[in-house]
Length: 179
Length: 370
Figure (cartoon, rainbow over the protein chains, first blue to last red):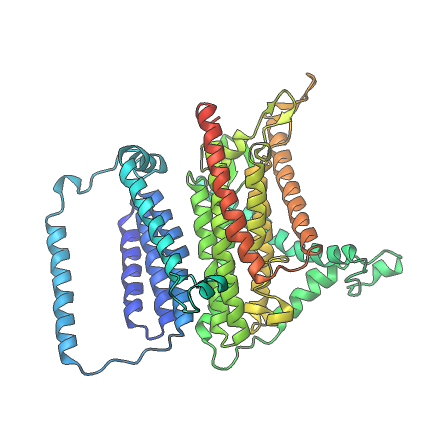
């Protein structure tokens, strides 16, 4: 990936992620987040992780953010009030932000020197290499994770489901008892 | 430099082909619906009046392809009070853009060789093209979703909510259908899929995907029609309930943009169905050196002519599927919303999963892909 392109994309990512925080309208924030995720997907693709980049675009930008949009609509979120005062909140917020920045700096300072500027092997990040890792090397962990997600989905449906009228009658008309 | 020029030329050609076909579909739809409903349809506007003097029937080209666009683009561009002006202006383009860029990975022909340059007739040769298609379709939701929200109108917002829920639901069925197709061909590259569909079985049957994945074809076609939000899946715009749904508050060029998106989506679904299931640019029994008919007869042809015939065959197939979608639209009534959701989640999704399991079994029993 040419350096100029990287700088352009990185700047775009920073500007749009700042937009997430600064915008007061939740829908505008969400759009800025979509933009950030898409720019990061393009960065992934440019750095050779093509499959991960497209999956990022499909899963995060295409599906999860749409669900966020639904939540914003269903909760009927309005333009947020600017928070003023609360010096303690600002103080601890600044400390947390500074800690995060320091951690990132430490991480980059100790990045593996052998990886710096190294060309990846051909086929790296392709769908075949990803599939080999997922379905051969870590098959059990992968299947266990998918089972876990399935359990979470079934659990969410069980909690959200309203009892049908016949079930409600059986439990003496008390809603919620059937779950 | 010349490679760059060729690349740009290919991108422009596929974009213009797709856009023009989408615009011509407007005429197809108006005259086609008239044909189906035993009406005459648009037949008034004329520029010279020469055709009428000569006693020729007016086919409505001027109405639909000249007068309508002029009307749309000269209309007042109205933004309702209290609307989010920025998003209201952005939404139509956010809807159109992802559909148009999807055409980049579509192979509209085999390769041609001109002056030593071998040109693959596909704007972008991407080896993860199927993922790219799913990504662009996923991004396409935002235009529709934000259009209604930014209009500050309850009907428009309801249309947006319906459209978003519908598109998210049917994207899953569409993805499952594409997974089965990818398993069958063992590749995500659309050009490689087209190549895999060349040749014949039993000496006469073309190796088209429809014969391997009939279930995936039905799934994809249904999900694709739902994605393009047309009758019988037009609940997001349901005129009798929501005025016009998410584009109620749009007029002029922006509304034309939403309309163009609808038609471009029809073209896109047809293009993808053709590529996945009907051989793309393949013509039965036609190989790079000419026809090899079942029974042994051959008819040699130059390579360039074969490639051009392939391009023509591709677009003929696409137009046939566009017509099929218009035919379905003007034949069926609209679903109820619960029917729509039941079909999507309890019909298409389990069927898609079963299809994947069955495909996997067959592939393993047959010993690997192909």
